[in-house]
Image (cartoon, rainbow, N blue to C red):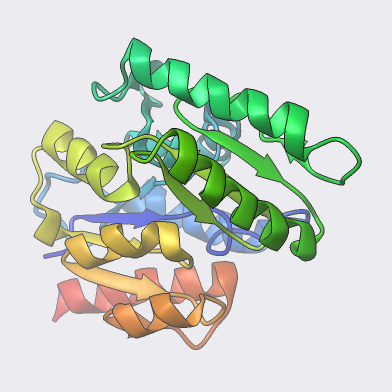
Amino acid sequence: MIKLFVSDIDGCLGEPYMPYNLDGLATLRRYAHDAGPPTAPAPTPAVSICSGRPYPYVEALTQMLDLTVPVLFEAGGGRFDPVEAQTTWNPVLTDEIEAEIKKVRHWFTTECIPGTKLSLDHAKRTQAGVVSPDPDEIVEVRGRTEQFVADRGPDLRVFDTDVSVDVLPPGITKRSGLQWLTDHLGLDMDEVAYIGDTGSDLEALQAVGTSFAPANANETVREAVDHVTDALVLDGTLAAYRHCLDANAS
């Protein structure tokens, strides 16, 4: 039984710098509304989010979808409970880790951003990131960031998308974030379905009971999941959710 359906945001619920599909989000909102609590023996999986986006962005989308299950932001660096209106930071986060992340953020600001379209991914606490609408800039800064991390903080990890580069501390990943969430909810990872589209989703996709990728996911992700949808982005995510409904009903 799939009791919890978790979706990434970028590439799964919407595309960066593009308008959201409001009709599609309304459909997902209805699915979330019809679902019972994730621990209930119901055929309709509860809905949650696991995203690298910062708290304000994830909280806003959580409110838009009227979710009642806690969601994960900053790739599991924090958890927001929309019913209790409470934010909990990952216990892995320490003062020492925050100090290292601040160093990376300072390096981005002083060495990478000037003279480019790059901008700091603001409002993040547990990771440092930059974003740009120029994919060539992302490729270039990804290489520089990997070298910087190798020289200064080998335990840090670098992930990228078409529009972003993020540096995460050890112990904070989407996979560990999902484990943190399921422990909190009293679920097993086998009872979770997850849909993601980039390398930062891989470990989480491999850890859950049922994994999905939308058709727009990168090749590595498509090869790693249980199911690749025929549809793109949000339409793919809705198709994945309906697959879970069918699987629970069979």
